[in-house]
Image (cartoon, rainbow, N blue to C red; front, side, top):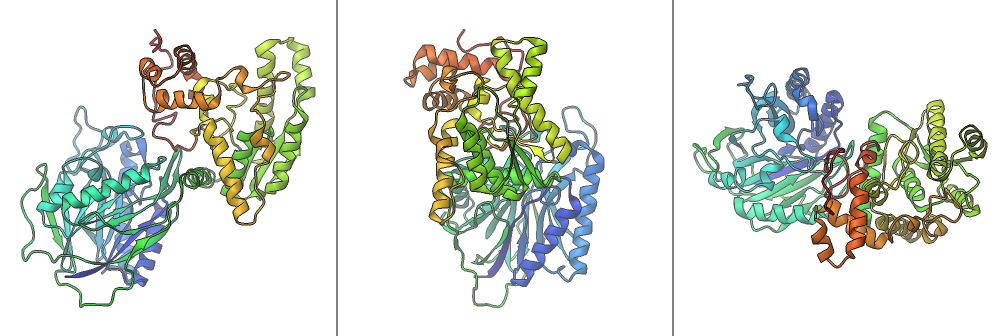
Length: 584
């Protein structure tokens, strides 16, 4: 059987940074060539970054992407890499780009190209366009209608892009009909908790359907609210794992494969969903037999807690660095939420770039300040204390506020103080709200919601405790100081806006609340369905009403890392003005 050394580069691209992304592609291509690769691949839209959103509708950006692709092909050849086929994702447009009602302006395409000998040897576009969850690809792209196949050293390699594997039909059965020896799919599949298991089973199934070895190359890094976890997978035609790359790490996975020889003549005609086979021969003859050096194997896989924690670190680091910031600012209350955000920030950008501010009021307990100080000591972050009592007294003297208005004033003063420091010193503020609070509206506009990014926005409160305990245990196992003070984990959560206040004054117990919220928010279950799961009907009514009436608050909260199947933001889009209630 012919042999092929495949180089799968799971890299972190930044949307719009065509020059920087091209530089990364050249770097990893050079590395792959140095390792003796015969075919090199990069993720979906690696040249432009993903997702480009409405940039796809801007003709100037589409043309810049096309020009950057051709410049990249020429540069690879100039650097002596032209004989090495390189698969690169980019933004293209249909050559029949005529305005048509119901079609994206300019007919953009989520495309990939095979670069060889200084030119584009083959280009193709994603056939299946996802239009669910965070994906809006019907809005942005027109579908491809070909089954691209390249012959490399005597092996026919079928090519696909992300959703082409997730949907039935299309390029998977077409790869079998074309007689491909390898199916290579380039992807920018966003991370979700427990998605890695789903992804593995999908790739196994599609390899069996295609009847050939299948390589699933994924992006890593972060873009706004999305995180990409890498986890590149290669399975054989029986669905057995041949190789699996680390999660959340840039790198090149090299693999020597024995693959079926291509047929004497190139495949022609149509195959699967009427896709026209577009075949290009790059090198017809198999390589002389060589001793395999990279037999494969699976990298150690992260446990559930470690995986979620690393996703949050990756998302935060990407947002800070890709937007040109160097440091972050956090209001430290001594509570579990701000403590976890601080630990994440220290891991993401280094404690020397994390600034914490304690802002005690007359209602702050003694331990709130001491726990914040202890957190700073454990992590090594920069810490200061700025009491808000003088500001609070000035407002109260002028306005005479009472009740909820008095409570919320404290939170808003803290938000104003944080933004003042941010403007003065150049840090970006991190908002510490969690998914349980955001779901129920248990937050203060222009107070808790102040910030450029919400690292735990998509993390339920029960998971906040779970992640803090995991991070401490992980540190202890390595002989390091656990970052989160034990008292921040064990004391009852409280906003400390009035004497003796605790969260359970306003919210159900978090263990119960989070299970109801997951059914309603993440799974779109109705009132009757949730009650049928064994929850008290009055409690369900109360929780659902809180969620429904807090939409306006969530719209004003900053973006944050998405780790669930349905996060607040692009995933879950409900009208603010909305009189429909599950409870009648």
